[in-house]
Amino acid sequence: MRKTLIALIVLVGFATGSAGAGDIADRPEDLQFPELTFDAPKAESLRFELSNGTPVFLKEDHQLPLVNLAVHFRGGRYLVPADKAGLVEIIARAWRSGGAGDRSAQELDEELDFLAANVRTGIQDVSGSTNLNVLTKDLDTAMALFMDLLTKPRFQEDRFTKAKDDLLQSMKRRNDDTAGIEAREWDRLLFGEDYWMNQLATKKTVGDITAEDCKAFLNRLVRADNIIIALSGDITRADAKALLEKSLGSLPMLVAELPAIPQPDHTPEPGIYVVNKADVNQGRVQIGHLAYRLGRPNEFALRMGSDILGGGGFTSRMMKTIRSDEGLAYGAYSDLSFPITMPGTFSAAFQSKSSTCAYAAKITFELMRGMQAEAPSDDEVTTSRSSFVETFPRRFESASRTVDLFARGELLGRPSGYWTTYRDTFAKVTANDIRDAMKKDLHPEAMVMLVVGNIEEIMAGHPDHEARLTDFGPIHTLPLRDPMTLEPLAE
Image 1 (spheres, one colour):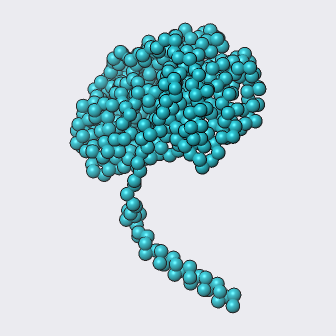
Image 2 (cartoon, helix red, strand yellow):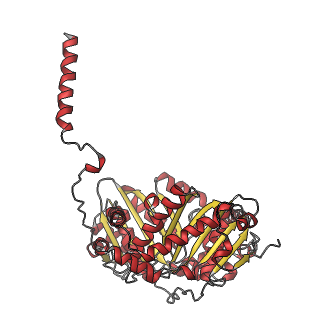
Image 3 (cartoon, one colour):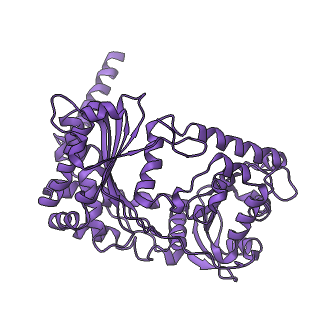
């Protein structure tokens, strides 16, 4: 009887499996999927203003009893005087940890922990934010603590001192690996030595920063007409407005309008720039030039061109040629950014053995010029377009991410209809559009090449390849800098 039952189960399972198998394609390329349909939310449907004019983006989500609140504000590192370089880095370390209002750092930690509330603070180049995640039932209590942190940060002495010490310790490691050197010198080459982005912290500037400097900087920025609020989770619009009116709605206005973000006026000189770090056996190479801001007429064609060239991972030409075909690098990539507030950059980068850096650079230039000479294939265009279009819904995958996207966009000045037409614009880009855009706005002849590594070995090249660094232009030697003063080190 038992054997009969087992046989019957197996027979039923086999029959069921056979019936289902007819609906499954024989090969992966024969799989068919329903057309992706996704309608991006409209920013205006989520937006309202407090009585003082502060914008709020709210998306209700009642699946969990949680509320997420983010306060985004304009202003960041570009406002820091050169003699206080490092200020935003210290604020980022000591703002949340340093106590607020009448509460010491330890008391604030304990109260937030008791509420299971997560609070994060941060400040970057041109903006900053504070974030609160808390259970709905504890929102009022947590909001009082959050407001103290926004308006009355303490920067308690021991936490403030630790933040400065931590920053100094991280600065000591600036020359430990080639990636940090490359990033620092790349910005100097493209934006200029004196540009605000390149006014970096030194031991002296960090030593001169006080807790009062940090408080004054935040007090200048956390103002009703300088913030945008993103709120999501288990809260209704009526309750949200009531909560915000009595808290963030009471913030004072700006004392003076913030200065505009300075734009770069430096013209990089094309050529090869080398930084010697003799204790490594691989070189880091980055090639590129200043690029463009969001909204350039051929932005979407350029995005797809960069994706096909090197931004698309293993499907890109750089990865296929430099890594898969030639075995010269583990990864080879290109990137073309379109910031909202200032020009971005184009770069093609890889890391290769010292002896093959020049050969990989030669291939990179050939691939760039190939993008300008001929239109990409239909398969390349389809793959790139699909990547942009089909990953688009991820930008709105949660309520908090959606409102943050809209809040930051309005804060920095992204056009209101940008996301509405995003997919349709990609759908209209043709192979010829990509070729024409890369030909018009990619300038291999005007690029700088930064090479960091054992320069003697890199200059020697590889016996099997004729390419040498000197093939690409004049060589300019950049000094390795003292990590604490950023002054050039003697060889």
